[in-house]
Each structure stands twice: as structure tokens, then as C-alpha cells.
Image 1 (cartoon, rainbow, N blue to C red):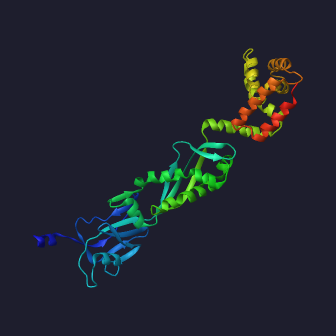
Image 2: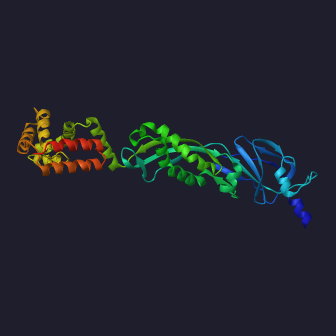
Length: 355
């Protein structure tokens, strides 16, 4: 019976792997109980590595080339099996092939906004996405820590883990880049470099090397984007109190004109505009702006604004009006629209207007 089993057993004299392009990272040669012929050939193509495993223990590793399997080319396996130098019999061993070519265009992205620290806005929740490329660098480590004894291990099996590593280092990358969020969109290459440097050590622990990272988009949630737009608008007028009032007026003029054209709805909008942080003083500026900007096409709106301004334009400001205006300015500062310096300057100007 043992003789028949020996006759039926096939002896493998050629070991090789032709990749099918299906994203396979590791592939086990199908032994099916057969044995490897002593002196047989092992063909390892470029961008491949072959690993011999003896009873679960990694033995010899082969790079690209054609190798004759003898005790000279299998020193570790020879030692583990206690072969002598005259050994020439068929032998059993698990053989794994690994693809070392780059796995390109792997996608990463934030499913939820990631909170980071920013010197302009304090805490910012941003979204970002891009792609990355990697390859197997240490087949032995990859086998022992990732692929194991599976017949086949693919890039899809690993994608979720690698995406998680990319995302958890976004905050580190932004901090290391030193680039404020306002400049981040224009410095995506630097952001990508820092993200690669922050994440690469984690890939090394898996037997991989992170070849490249790209950042294709960085954006804020909608509610923060609105505040950013206001911040940009304030940056255009600087620290001048008069220009600040004019900026707030400009935001309210379209609504006021629509209300006036609709038949007397302007007075409510004037009150809303004044509540944006300018108080009674905003009424004075609005009257001036409307009288200059709506001549020839908005006489009714300008007249209504002038009447509202003349009714609420005292020589000075009362203490309660000053306090109310300062509180509004404080709200703008808390939202990041005004800086500490801008708030302090405007507060000082208002205190000078006390009756």
C-alpha cells in the first residue's frame, strides 16, 4: 500500500507563479500532498519574492531569478530538517509567492469630518480625500503578521486597515506641516508629504513601504464654510471701524432693497441689520451708504433708510447701547469672524462714543 502511494505521488520539479493581475498580494503554491523534487527549479519573476515555510516556520527567502533547489540554496530549510550534505531526496515544504510591485491608486478619505487644531480658527472639522500607493518590502514580516497560511491574500483584504492608518494620522500631518487651514488648500503637496511621513512607520510594521500619497481635496463642513466666508470679507476691510460698519451694511443692503420694493418691508430689515453688531451707529452708516448706492433706482429705499437713520442718530451713544454693541462684537469674535485685536480696537472706539 505504501508503495502504491509512492507511485501515485507526483514530484514537483518546477515552482513558479504567473500573476493574473487580480490584486493578489500573497499566493500559496498548491502542493496537494506532493513533494518537491530535489534539484528542481524555482522561478521568481521581477516584482516577486518566494518564501519557503517549514511546519509554520519561515525558512528561506528567494528574490527574482531562477534557483536550483539544493541544500546549498536552501540553508535554513536544510538546518531545520537536519539534512546532511548527501541529501538528494524529494521533500515537503510550503511555498508562498508575494507580489512586490506597487499597488497604485488605493483610495483614502474621511467618512466623517476630522477635528484638528488651527491657529486661526482654534478647532476645525475638515474633510479630505486622495490616494496612495504601496508595495510589500519585507515578505517574511508580511507573511508572519498579515497574510499567514491563507491560500490567497489580496489588496481588498488589506484596504480597510490601510485606510484607517491614513485617516488616524491626518491631524498629525496638519500639525507637522505648520500650514494654517486657510492656506492648506493651496499647499496640498506639503500636506501630502507630511501625511506620508506620519503614516509610513505604521506601514513598515506590516512589512510594507508607503511609496506615495496624494491629497486631492480639503474642505470644511458647510456651517464652518459660511463663517470662513465672513472672515475673508472682514479681512478685506481690515481693522477700520467705519469699514467694518460698511461691510455689515453691504451684507444687509440687498435684503433691504428687496423689502422696500415689496412694499414697506424695509424697516424690519433695518432692525435686523442693526442687530448684526453695529447698533444705532449702523443706522447712520446705512443711511449714507444707501443714499450713495441707490441713487436713480432706489429712491424709495434710500428715503426709508434716511428716515430710519435720522430717527436713530443721536449725537453720542448711551451706555446701554454701547454695551449691546460690544456684546454683538463679542459674538462675532467668538465665531472667529473678528480677531482679538480687531475686537479690542472696535471696543475702544465704541467706549469713546459714550454720552
